[in-house]
Length: 253
Image (cartoon, rainbow, N blue to C red; front, side):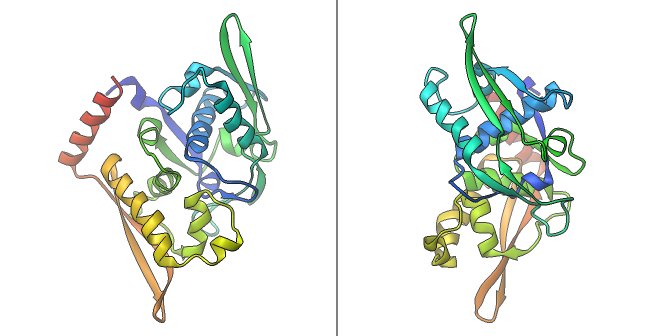
C-alpha cells in the first residue's frame, strides 16, 4: 500500500459530532483541521505549540500553497468559530466541551519556507492528542470527499462500522452536525424532505462512491412524520474494496 495510506488519524469520539455555534464550518476547514490534528498527534502531547511546513499541511487539500489569503481565512475561522464537542452516541463521550477549533494560529516565513503554528484549548488538548475512545480515519479517503456532510458522516460512520449502525438521533440533531451550519431561524423552518434531498442523499452517494464503506439511511417515524434517523454501515465487499484501493493508489501517485 502507498505511504499515504499509513496516515491514520485517531479522532476522539467527542470531536466527531461537532456543532458550530458562531459560524459555518467549511469542508476545507474541516479537512485542514484533521491534517493539523494528525501532525499534532505525531509531535506529541508534551508540546503546547505545534509547527509544520505549510506544504506538509496542504498536501491532498484543494488549495494552492501560494494563496496565503485563503489559508489565513481558514485558520482565522478555526480560531474564531465556537463549537460544542459531543459524541454521536448520547452518553458515550466522557465530557461536554465548548471552545474554538484552534486556540491560536500563526504563519511565518523562515529560510524561504512558510510554516504554520497552532495550539489547542487546554480543556481539549489531552483528549485530542491522546484519545481513549476514537475513530481511526484514513486521511487519503477524507481528502477525496467534497462536501462537509460527506466528511462528517464518513467520520461518524467509520467510528461505528464494526457495530454496523450509528445511534438514532432526531433528524434535527443531525442537521448542524452534517451541514456545518449553526442553528438559525432558517434552519428551524427546514423540512425533513429538503434536508434529505440536499444533504443526506448527496453525502451518502459521495461516501458510497468514494470510500471503503457503504452507508444506508434508516428512518424512524413518529406518527406519519420522520422523527429520528440513523445510518446502517457495511464495509465494502472484498472485490469492491480491492477495486477501491487500486483507485486510491492511482489517485495518490
